[in-house]
Length: 383
Image: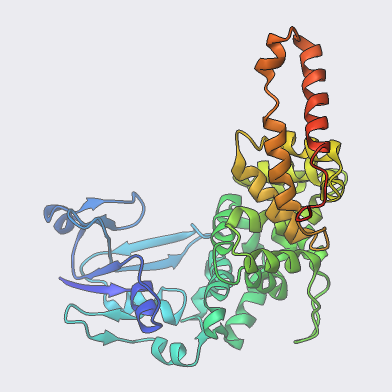
């Protein structure tokens, strides 16, 4: 039995990137031997085991043979006779197939070290095209590593274009597309995920309205930035969390009839992401007037965002307003903070004690809150 450190941990160390997780490859062992050593089986389909002490994943070397369409259409063989080279040949990119032996010696059987030096993302064998998920992973890795100077090799990009033109892409589960996209939104340059999918022709199948908004693909260097990509880049520049990046990207193409229904038909978007998108859609019309310190619009914006109960929601809305409408008057955040304090100073309990109840209480509460907000309507930062 031989154990190797494999994949991302080796790659990231060579790139001087902090290593978050370590994956291990076991050659020359059987499932029974792993279980006898105290490892726990982690997957019913693949020979992946959990170390009894570290909790890290150890996978038996395996072969894969394409047997049916889709990313699950493979037969898997594993056992003590599967060699290191056979396992590495089934992996996606050369930079993910570097290994270290138990003495810490680097082993490179597929040219991954040269590709790291050349800052090149390159597939290992033509079998790459058998798994449509690898097209998404290629786009996601570019979103992660382009800041380090990486780009897709011409051969890999041509293969991805070929993959995008086949029916294999339609076999992808919505859940897997969302998983890869959500991960890409956390990467340093997430817009490159969508640009790469658009360039290779996959985006029109996966997210047709976004592809339409990004425009017809132009020759190298001639593609103007579309509104969704501009918004996403501004969100990244503000170090926004993935949820805010998502809303910035999709807000403009979820307007009008149908709203975001096309998006939820395409992807199983997380509920909190959709909630923020819906909240912004409902609150957007109040922002221009609130920026001018109009009391009613300011109050409605604060009520919709439930600023008192959920201050983080108002913070996200404000950040999105600055991202999507950068020409809004400065001081909006300070103004809303003041207005919210004035609003919350009007206590429903006090009004109730004064005899107001039911609908009358609601009307009086709004009227007094409007007066309290209007009373501070001097321009922010003046006298």
